Every structure is written in structure tokens, then in C-alpha cells.
Length: 159
Image (cartoon, rainbow, N blue to C red; front, side, top):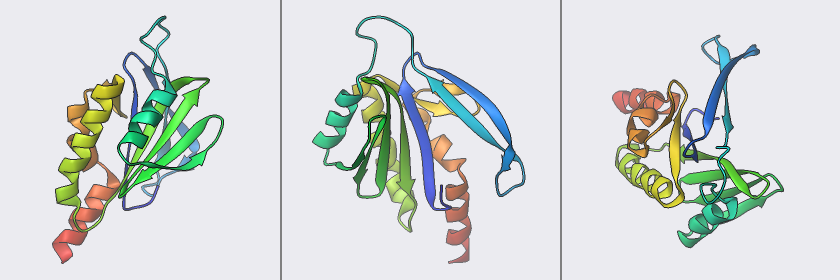
């Protein structure tokens, strides 16, 4: 992850989020890196989210496929990149990357609407590293807690 990139995860409703610390790897602050693992719901029936449905939803909105691998696909549109991680045919999680530029204050609202639409259309929730799954309306709060947003604010002050 780069300094100018907000990264958030979304996962199917009912997924379990597990947190652990990797003591062998540290962040720029010197603290161990937190590792989040998402386990999709273990319910039967139509509650499962199909990875191809999410990929189709992205393609319908103009996202282009950058890479396609057996376990994942990466999509790109403007300043948003989405990694779709699958477990067989089912969605395990999506990782969303938002490129922070000089227009980030304006883009924040657009990104938030995108996250809300994606979550509502595909039965997903945001992954909050501190809480677990949360509603998509928590996107702005999560984004503003990111290192990239803090760097953006510092850069804005110095301009």
C-alpha cells in the first residue's frame, strides 16, 4: 500500500473477520502489522455472494479487468481499483483502493456513494479493522482514519 492510497475491504454479510498481529513485520510506526482474515458466511442457499455477480456489477459500471487469476480478479476505473478475491465460485472479499489526489475532498463523497451502491447491490458490508463488519455508511470515517488521508491533510496544510 502506498502513502496516497486508501484501502478498505468489503465482505459478504455474515462473514467473520479475524484479526492477528504479524510480529515479524512492522509498519512505518514500528508496531507489528495487523492481519485481517475474512471467512465468508457458512450459510446455505442464496445467501452466498457469487464472485461473477460482483465482477459483472463492476463491468457494468465501466470497470476494466486488469488481471484475471484463478483466485482473484483486479478491476480499475478512474481512481478506484477493486480486487475481487474468490473461494471457488463464491466471493470471499473485495479490497478497494482509492487513489488520493488533490481533489480528495470532492472524491470522498463519490467514493462513499460507490461503496454504498456496491454493498447494497451485492449484499456486502465494510470491514473495519477495529470492529469487524460495519454498514457501508461508515466508509467516510474509515477513510479519514487512514494514513493516506492524514498525509493528504498534511499536504493540504502546507499548500
